[in-house]
Amino acid sequence: MTRPAVETLLSRLAHKFGERLRTDPEALEGVAGDESGLPGCSPAAVIWPRSSEDVAHIAREAAELGVGLVPRGSGTGKAGACIPRPADVVVDFSRMNQILEMRPKDMYAVVQPGVITGDFHAAAADIGFFYPPDPGSWESCSLGGNISTNAGGTRAAKYGSTQRYVWGLEVVLAGGEVLRMGKRSIKGVAGYDLTSLLVGSEGTLGFVTEATMHIIVAPAAVETAWLSFPNMQVASRAAEKIFSAGFVPRVMEIIDKEGLDAVRSVSDLVIEDGVGAALLVELDGPQETTFDGLIRLCEIAVNAGASDSALARKEKDREAMRRTRRLVSTRLKEQFPFKNADDIAVPRSRMAELLDRARELCRDARFCAYGHLGDGNLHVNLLCKTAQELEAAQPLRRKILELTVSMGGTITGEHGIGLAKRDVLDIEQSQELIALQRRIKATLDPYGIMNPGKVFPNNSNHG
Ligand SMILES: Cc1cc2nc3c(=O)[nH]c(=O)nc-3n(C[C@H](O)[C@H](O)[C@H](O)COP(=O)(O)OP(=O)(O)OC[C@H]3O[C@@H](n4cnc5c(N)ncnc54)[C@H](O)[C@@H]3O)c2cc1C
Picture 1: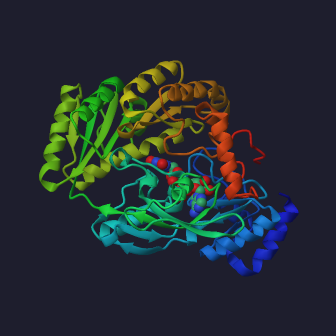
Picture 2 (picture 1 turned 90 degrees about the vertical axis):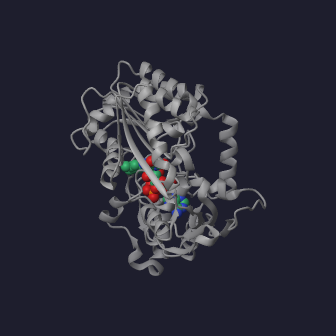
Picture 3 (picture 1 turned 45 degrees about the horizontal axis):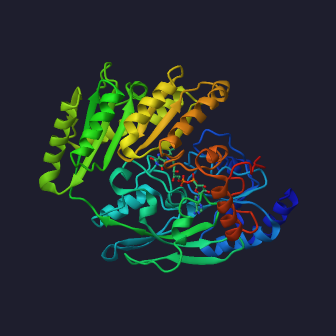
């Protein structure tokens, strides 16, 4: 793609899009980066579509000229998957943000991709329903971004990730074809499951312009506890005992000592110096049994070595516990601006072993582990203060990813590959599997214009 090609595209789109097409530095800087920590890059332009017809128009013109298009939700991604190249055009979905239909009787809602996840939670709650996926960025991330990354979150422990809730999609392909796929019924197996193919494809196969999202009846009660432990080994083995006793917590989050140290001064909880690990646990279910269930769960934890268990009796206590967990990532980032964060995942029964072995590997490094113990997804951080430290940490990072894969795990449980992990994808996937995915991409995007340079290794002409 060349600069003249993008100039031609912009001149063709200028009249139709008016103030919804911008090329001024302020607008371009606003869509240059995400939350991955990778350097941003201002694109040639940003466009705000308002309809699938708008998106199809852009895709048709861009295909003809070979201009790269980068879909963007809210830019909270952690893999650099929406970072453009200098001559790309960013297609920003923030103005396609309407909930088009709520159909509780049929357990689905129809949404535009720019709907903020937290707004969708609230809309479902207003009618007594529940949309479980809750990435920590729910206040600002978009459903389109969640679908395109197959976002997880704390409640995936019981309810799974976004993919489980995507029943159908409207998709615009490169070239402008508008396709509807999936279902609006509980069952539906006609043809290949292309909806699932699009979920998690990080904007490389097509634009999501509308989604049919499954919603479920809200649980009557939610109970929350904060459990303190002397160290991560005791905490992770206590969690195993809780699972073995038959509990299915909707949330089971773990934080190590370094994570607790990072949030101690800003948390509303009192975190004693001697505490070496904590679990945030939530149960949901019927009003009559959920609280008693949590008490039994806490007893198991105390018998397994917890030094303290605190139950949230008021909403403000619960929020203090959740907030403390949410703050870990941002506080670490403030203290270690070049931290390397990977979101590895292993079969849940191997979580305690992963924690032991990762810490052993990192014994000479500044290291912090926290995350979604309940679904086997751990955020491992190499705490770097400078770009040089980050560079020097890469061999260790690779060892952690190799260890994870050797344990039957994955190099990314929820954040995706984007730019951040494209050069380590081959640790997990064979060349044949990567080649098959390239062929699938070439079929859906024969022009090679959809989010170029993302996901695939050694494919970089990324600026
Ligand atoms: C504080 C914090 C906490 C987080 N916690 C979690 C967590 O618990 N779990 C988790 O999974 N993630 C988490 N994330 C990462 C991030 O929020 C998710 O990846 C989220 O799904 C990204 O949504 P977004 O709208 O910001 O998408 P963007 O960052 O804008 O885009 C992400 C990807 O989706 C593509 N895309 C966006 N919209 C469309 C569309 N309409 N059509 C096609 N492709 C599209 C983009 O091209 C890109 O590839 C967290 C991030 C932060 C900053």
